[in-house]
Length: 249
Image (cartoon, rainbow, N blue to C red; front, side):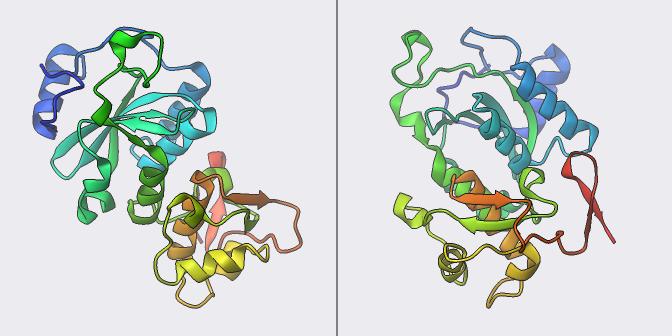
């Protein structure tokens, strides 16, 4: 049984065998709370009811929205990456840097399970539960990368529906690079409020690329979403339903 400091990641098959045999994830707990906060748990349960419990970006967005720390077991190719998010500190803990994840692995990234955090952030008074310093990394680049390269092709439920969007800052100021046509799109978004429908027609963009950029800006706290702006329009080709999930027309 490995602890949070082991740099060797579990294979998915081994992880599932341990869970089935013991009812536990197989990672040593370092004490503390045994259940997730109710508000976060409610959102995660809602995702599960809507068959979106494995949606890495929606689960990450829920943690960010509630500013709650959580341990996410992410399936990357055939490995399980235990990644603990600390939204209030804007850092995450992982045996390996998730920015080293392969492009294909990111494209297929999914959440296997979510648990309360076993480690604490640096500087926490429970110092015996703080992990090794090299296993803590800035959270913003991870959010940016999963939004732009992860499996989600549509806007997050929280910002979807009838809306207009505007960038309130340039993420490049925080070292977050918008590649290719996304860079000029960010600059244009700083000057005007537009719908996803209109934005998808900009040079070099599509509905998917525009959606990914909006998700990235939202998680970078660089996006203003308005529902009553004259430019607000429905998402192209989508009928929004319960909890913001939808289906194609």
